Length: 234
Image (tube, rainbow, N blue to C red; front, side, top):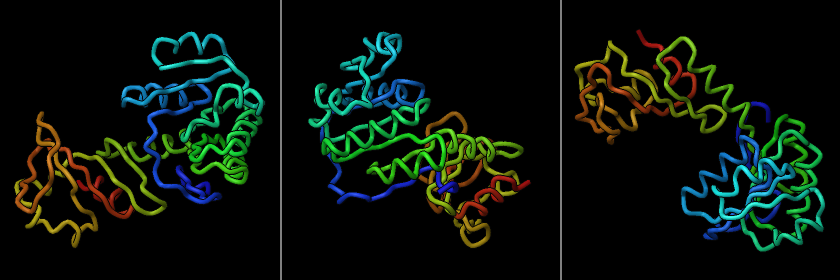
C-alpha cells in the first residue's frame, strides 16, 4: 500500500455512484476544509463537523452547515443525522483513534460511501478494515508530486496507479516545429500527448496535426518511467 497514494477497497458491496447533493465532512483541518469548500463551490450541500470551536466558527459562512461535535461517539453521529448522508469524508488526521472510531461508526450507521484520510500506511490499513470505501494519503501523494518536479520541466504530476502517470510539462526543445504525427511519441518515447496549451492560450485537445511550439505546455500520459524520461529530454 505504501506505493499507492490512493487506495480503493471494496470491503462492502459497491453501490452505484451517488447522485446525492449532500456530503458530510468530518474534520475541518487543511485537508477536510479544502474538500468541504471545493464541494461547496461545486454546488454540494456540505455539513462540516469538527471538535474545534475555532475551526467551526472559521467555516460558518463558507459551508452550508457546520457543527462542533465529537464524532468518535456513535451516538453523536446518530444525533446529527449522519445516517441520512450517502457520502461522507473523514478528514481527521491528528487524532488517529478518532479517525478510526468515526469511520467505523459511519459504517455501522450504514453510510454507503465513505472516503477517509490516512496519515500512515498502518492507519490506512485499519481504515480499510473497519469499512472505509476509499483511503487517501494526501501528504504522501503531494510528496511524490513534488519529488517529480525537482530538476526537470515537470509542472505537475498525477499518479494514476502504481506504474502509470499523467504529467504536465513544457514541450522539449528537440521536438519543436513538428507535428505529433511526425514525432510518433508513443512509439519513440512511450507517451501520448493528451492536450496542449499554446503560449498564453487555453488548453486544447492534441491532434495528429498539432505542431509543437516553444513554450507549449503539454499534458502527456504513459508509464511513469517513460513520462519522467520524456519530461527530462534536453
